[in-house]
Image 1: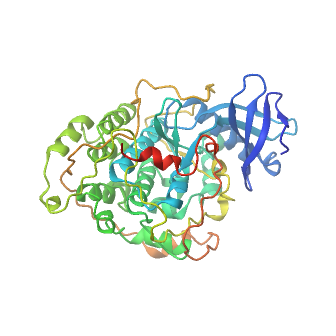
Image 2: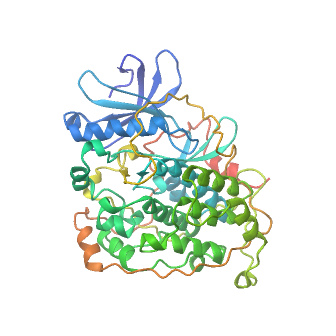
Image 3: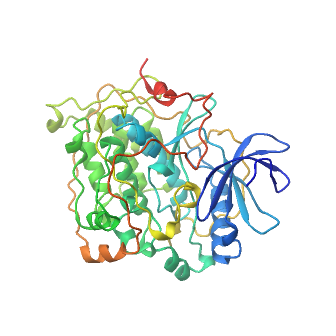
Amino acid sequence: MVAGTVIADRYRVLRVLGQGGMGMVLEVTHTQLGGRHALKLLHTSHANDTEMVARFENEARIAAALRSDHLVRVTDMGRLPTGEPFLVMDFLHGADLDQLLETHHHVPVATAVSWILQASLGLAHLHARGVVHRDVKPSNLFWSEEPDGRQVIRVLDFGLAKAPTLGAQRLTATTANFGTPQFMSPEQIMSAKHVDARCDQHALGLVLYELLTGEPAFIGETSGAITVAIATQPAPRASERRSEVPLGLSDVIARSLAKRPDDRYPSLREFSAALAPYAGPEAAELARATAKLLGPGTQATDPLRAAAAATAARISDDSDVDRTLVAPPNPSIAGFTSSTRPKSQRSRRWLFAGVGVAAVAACAAGLVIWRGAAGKGAPTQAVGATAEVSARADEPRSSTPAAPAATTAPPPTTVTPVVTTASAAASASASATAPRQNVHRPPPRASAVPTAKASSAPTGSILDKYRPH
């Protein structure tokens, strides 16, 4: 796509941000209103694929109907004269979490938990409508700084939705292998048809694990080895890999990574309430907003009371080690470890063959709608939005809170994973592409979602913002 090309008489192309087998993402500006946007365009070869186009347009409708600071928004959609559909999204300034982990080892405890709580709140908007993301991973969680100085985590990529109108059985057959093995749950490895919202909880637990330890919970030389490990082996305790991780937080992560969905938290409501004590004062508000979206849970826990009780408690196992990380007064990542120090290897994320090329993150995600009491019927009304993020009444204004001076853990929860057969997991991963051997991660690659200009975000500026004052 040539710079200067005008799409749909209103979007002038500035540059190509990324492209892959399914399409490309362009930076564009509105010819009359101005402002920068990211325009996602389906590849010409898919323009006549009725099912692919239906998914693409369903993604646009879902994203446009959901209003949250913690979800990327779709503001427009249409088709080229040649038939290729497109959708227009917010242009984000910042970096995805995978990029941050490319150049830095791990994240301070309070910050990592706050990021996951923000992502949980974004995903709760999907879950409340019966939609599960299925591809939650660091590259689909985007850190950005707003014009008012707030630092926000947004969930990206709502593609490949399985709507009832598209035919559930046919979509299940064609999308069963979508996902990123290192962040898939055991049940997703077996069959995408049977996943529910607890699949996303499992993925969030894996992301939090990597943010805290600098390493994936499950490592293998091949995608098959990774999927077998996910299905059959418990992850090493996060507190064993990094001593600063509170034992209670390690328990929360372990429960979210249980092999059987029934052994995890019933929903993100309870998961967020369990995480809240390990972040700053706004964490409880994030958990409360999540609870409000998802309604009464199986465990009737007020997030604010749970956080206060857990903070006041003292766990004897933690008494011999100072595991409290105090964050600076502003939203920051104090103590973010630079990649100039030796770091553990982070094995590459192997995509199943059906995913296509991962260079375009907005084209590589998967959603599935499950049958449940909440959210019957997919949203269909497109909601316009400006580039700036407006505050939501049910969500806290500021993000990435500072941690309390002394945070202690709630009583640990014992989790006994239920082992899934290795042979079934191995067969589920048989269609994966052959990955390369584990090596140190290369320098950060260009994100498919636009990041800040060099003039507004010089080298190291994100980390500078995280440093204590």
